Image 1 (cartoon, rainbow, N blue to C red):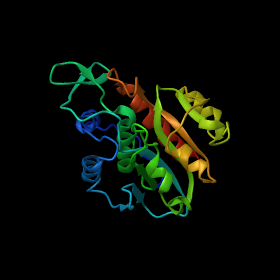
Image 2: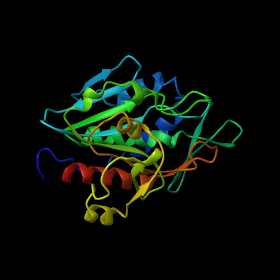
Image 3: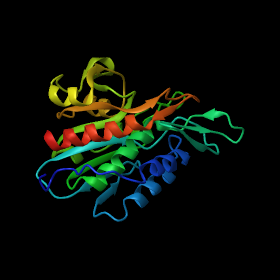
Length: 254
């Protein structure tokens, strides 16, 4: 394995990390606790972390001519409440103080979980963590990606968002028929190995970046959550781990 390749390691605390993320309430516009938690998880790493005026986090690890970049958003749609996180075999979900199921914010805490793991395992990487991706009432979403400085991506080869439902989809055509990347951007061999397929999808931060004129390939990858934006939201943990390994393989080979 080359020195610039991501390592494939078993993180014994990975489930603990996910449940701690799910406990945090990060309603759009109130991402401060989430940002503090993410920074605490990365405090032992040598990173450049820049927070812009709106609150987005831009992270660089290592020195290279070009970088792979991973993105996720820091916010969720759910209102703050006391959550208990339950693990039923491979299924992870949340309940309130009355034992009623509530949303856990897997959209997009699963992306944050993936990024924290990648930053620990990859020697060379860039990360974009956006605020206020979710639409709140009449306020349009993707606010963080809509106003950020695109110069962060000047030496980036591509941006992979981990912000898609289910376990087997890579969105290459976004909202309003926005072309995010070529359909063969990810080689068929990698897609087949991990049982992913290229599909059309909706809006997220990488779509906003592309609509603003970002010239590099971007896409949005399934990361194991279901029933987003509802009280029935849950994650299949093995599918989230599968996403992590899929992304690491892309980073190592593209």
